[in-house]
Amino acid sequence: MTSPRLSNAQRMADKPLYEGCVGETQLSIVIEMLRIKAQNNILDVAYDDLCKMSRRALPVGNNMPKDYYSTRKLTSDMGFPTLKIDSWVDGCMLFWKDKEQLDGYDCCGVSRWRTGSWCKKLPASQMIYLPLKPRIKQLYEFKETAHAMRWHATYSNQDGQMNHPCHGEVWKHFDRTHPDFSRNPRNLRFGQCTDGFAPFSTYGGNYSCWPVIF
Image 1 (tube, rainbow, N blue to C red):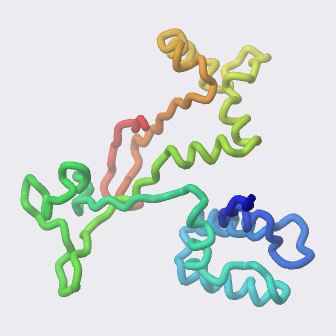
Image 2 (tube, rainbow, N blue to C red; image 1 turned 30 degrees about the vertical axis):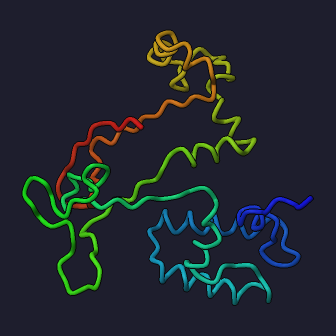
């Protein structure tokens, strides 16, 4: 009987950052570095320099990734896929589904592609879509996060004050209206208020977006 093939994440979780290291694995340090990169908007080249400096400072034979490219390879099968969808330059149309084969905006005919002498067509703009289902599955695969995902159904409000949306009348009304859905504590209710969020630039025009229901 052959043993099951381990994923990169499983191998990284069992691999210490360096021999004798306690408390940090290759997986934990990679996750932390990616979090810092995202929160501080660190450029790829700066991330590469940090990796090189860390590898020099750590004991010889350490498992610090060499650069951002190797970090992405290590985390490629962790269940967090992304999908790039071509969009119109002003962001008001996606070249997706029935419009996927169009070469331009169907109202004004503005080209979908960059202008230049490239050998292949390059989109003028793209939107990065993060599929939710694989990320939700990850949350239910770990005991700690799985418990937190069902917290609203197991927690008892002792002080009589509303400290979670499940204590509010809107949530309770939803439970009464959709009893089959609410009966399973693993069912999720998604909503994100994006009012006042500028999706295309930190500065510039003011945008007012409707709440997004996933």
